[in-house]
Image 1 (cartoon, rainbow, N blue to C red):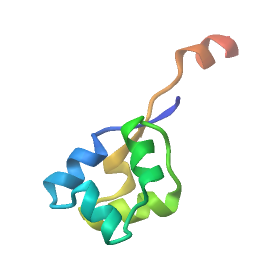
Image 2 (image 1 turned 90 degrees about the horizontal axis):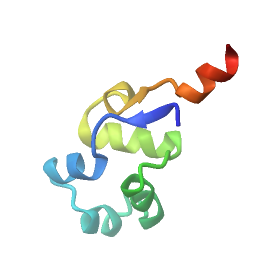
Image 3 (image 1 turned 180 degrees about the horizontal axis):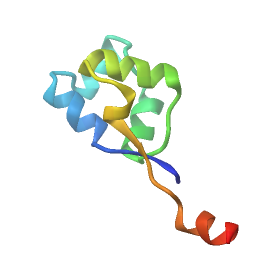
Length: 76
């Protein structure tokens, strides 16, 4: 995967006062989205926007591009 999270999103949300229970109860994020964060899977830009709003950050604070070594080898 070329894009990955720099931080544990769920832990960062908990530190900011947003438990998974609160996120679901207030309908900020659904269980499927929370599960994707647990599994380090990518989510929609809409969900990234919500996370940035809750954590007062930019998308680049959450994600980074990491070249896939297999892709580099295929190009050569």
